[in-house]
Length: 211
Image 1 (cartoon, rainbow, N blue to C red):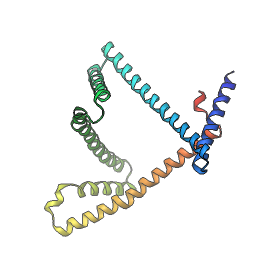
Image 2 (cartoon, rainbow, N blue to C red):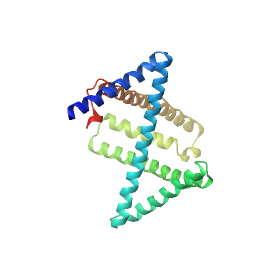
Image 3 (spheres, one colour):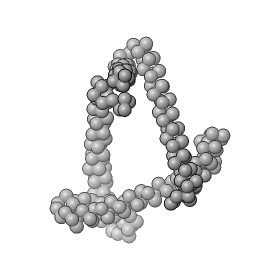
Image 4 (spheres, one colour):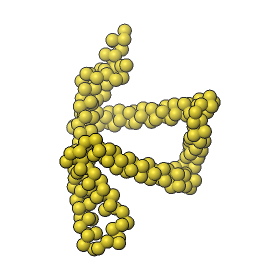
């Protein structure tokens, strides 16, 4: 019975995937309408999954507060702001002034602090790499990181114009050529991996929906 159920869901997934893919390659009105209907169903399922995730988040932290376990005050703060933002967003909409205030003075500073910590962590990690493995690539990594940090710092304002211009040119060359090229390569790798995973699901090689 379990094998038949897994086979049934595999057939459903393959049929839906083929219809959606064919809808992008052919302009048949019926096929296009069916593809849009399936995509809307997928969006509804994704929204339902998000709500389940939020409910699970609330439940976990609520149980943590009830049990008075370690770190429960942070869970209480999370639950409070979770409920406040949820209620205000449902009643007044996402453009409500209080929600914008929360975003500008709570969310953005937290994101900025996280980015600052990430930059410091990368620099510290780079120095650890150099101390443990001293080669050309480690030296290039540290030199590039320091150059980017120094090139974006206010210290350049007090330097000579030619030196500032040279640092800015090298910084832009590294950040706009090498960094962008590496980021695009990573994005292409992610896209190819997602396509390969989708094809495996489409052909029934992987069946995550049957577990």
